[in-house]
Length: 109
Figure 1: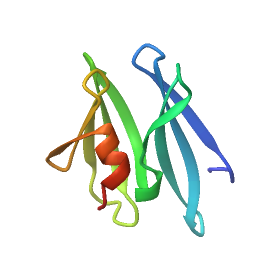
Figure 2: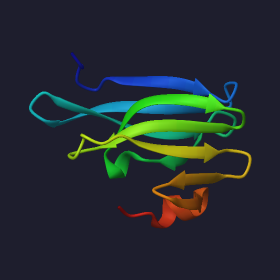
Figure 3: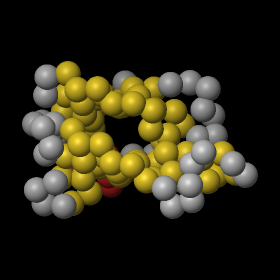
Figure 4: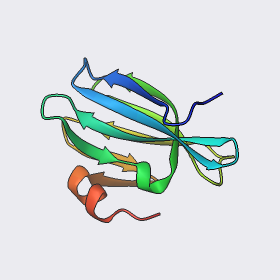
């Protein structure tokens, strides 16, 4: 059971970045783990996925790329993957590649 105002943090890329997962109640007893990624050196949120209601499922690291598996609330039946390359500051999502600035400023589902 998820507690109100519950959150979780996952360190990635040898501690250089942190995934913040915040559990938000969308409907009675339906919790969605919305998330963002912070640069640990600058303490800046570099990617914010919370506004899209992406529900975090898992993360894996493959060389210099981080792959996040997620669902989209309220259509949570399908699972999606995004690949994040921190060296190139790029994110591959839904068949397109965005740089971090472009994603944060203009991405709309």
